[in-house]
Image 1 (cartoon, rainbow, N blue to C red):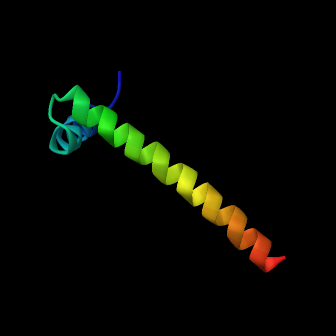
Image 2: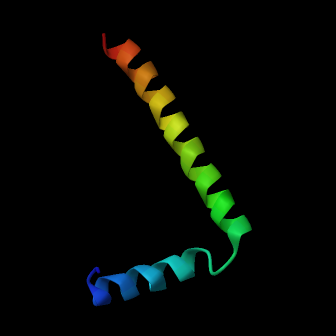
Image 3: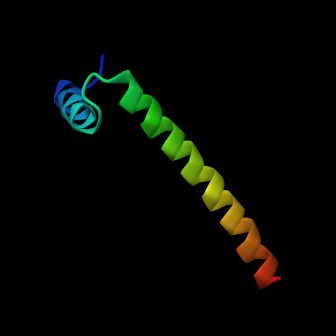
Length: 51
């Protein structure tokens, strides 16, 4: 399997973000996707200004 120390650190970090709460996980996923969409739209607009 993976590196035990790394896996434990990952689980600790994950539990600090959304400890055993699927609703918070879903909110985080929606926020992340929304951020990616906004960044992509801004990138397109800045590309138009540059060219």
